[in-house]
Image (tube, rainbow, N blue to C red; front, side, top):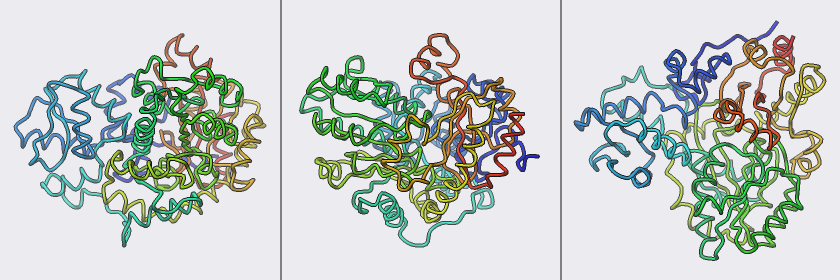
Amino acid sequence: MSAFTHLPLGQRIPTSLHGVSASLPTMRDVIGYEEKDPAVTRHMTSGYPRFVVHPFAKKAGTHLLRTLGLEGHAIWLTSSIRAAEQLRLHLGEPAQLLPVHAALTGVTFPDDAAFSSRAKTFLQHTGMFLSSREAEDYLLRVGELTPDQAQDEKSFEGYAPANVKGHVSRFYQHASATDVFLAPTGMNAIAAAFRVAADLQRPLGRTRWVQLGWLYLDTIALLQKFTDTPAGDYLYQSDVFNLPALAQLFAAHAGRIAGVITEVPTNPLIQTPDLTAIAALCRDHGAILIIDPTIASPLNIDVLPHADVVVNSLTKYTASEGDVVMGAVVVNPRGPRAADFRARLPHALEPVYSRDISRLAAQIADTPAVIAQINRTAPAVIEFLRTHPRIKELYWSHHPASRANYLKIARNPDAVGSMISFVVDMPVAQFYDRLRLAKGPSFGMKTTLICPFIYLAHYDLVTTPEGRATLAASGIHPELLRLSIGCEPADDLIATLAEALA
């Protein structure tokens, strides 16, 4: 019998007002969420912040529109005035900045669904939305929230930015605190690092970017939409293991490739390329290598010596309670462009709200213990799934195709990480609906989470023959499930999985 219970649709995971995930307990709920079915979306008052506008941000926006006499307008609140200006330029007329006397920053325009969709997508790709804690504090100041309606949470006593930077630099081992730059989201860290790298390479005639492996959807979108001339400057190498093909790509675009962006391991196939060889290839061709190790955590793998910069979502593992959104860029101090990155990153990154840093500082010291517990639990769950007759495909850090490359960068042989992706040999809805684990986006929490990742990240591809062909060309099954192991006992997790697979 499972030790877990089904969570109702829309319940925050965790239950904190700032929880970064929300329950989607059935495949029908997942599809309804993607298709914006009101029967589902009315329950989704919260969700992963870059996809679901936090209720505090909505309430703050409504209050601002009312006090500014802008009823009938839409409003999108941002992390800074600079972000608001970038959004306004992206949207064009009739978008307008909020007045300078407004207590928050953002953009307004006559309510229009197409404009709102463009604004949401831009903020999603760049990670420049308003912090839910900043919105909460605004609502408290203007009397729209009472103290008993706000989140009571533990914060850090001391200078939180130094605490967080110190921990992150120690996680990477080769960096000092001056090499660590904080961002309000992991996506903003990626967008800023990419923008700085592109600006460094453009004067040299290098404008083409290589996506190595199937990456997280917004990283893909960043490369496709924000390269100088996307049709010619976006290059995709799907097979992370095919080094001769990557070398041929560099040869075919000699002197034009600005850099390579990859995840190690990749999301969601958990594939690890030969980083030593890829880094050497980039150095030989003057290309910048940007690595995202979020899937496994820098406490499990050592990637900084191979990269020019590393981008990392601190929402995962470091914010293991699941109630903070933040990111970081870490500069390789021995990289040839380290001084340039250190000088430019502060101007490219968005500011981080003080309460978010304080909340992360209050829990970041738990990260080594959380990772250690996950590394003890995950192997037993992996072995159960690997030998179960109803598991058709299984991916993890020690998958035979990746094992040798992963072990080259692993902190130790037992540092397997939390992430497991698999395909079941049964109707996916039958398994998913029966499973009693917490079901929602995100990973790297103390709480085990599972989601039908491709449905959530690439629903447009899942639902068309052409899209499924695109996924198949990259070796991705549309019904792939992504499981992030938390800190619960391995026996309880295995019993719960066994119950759903029966």
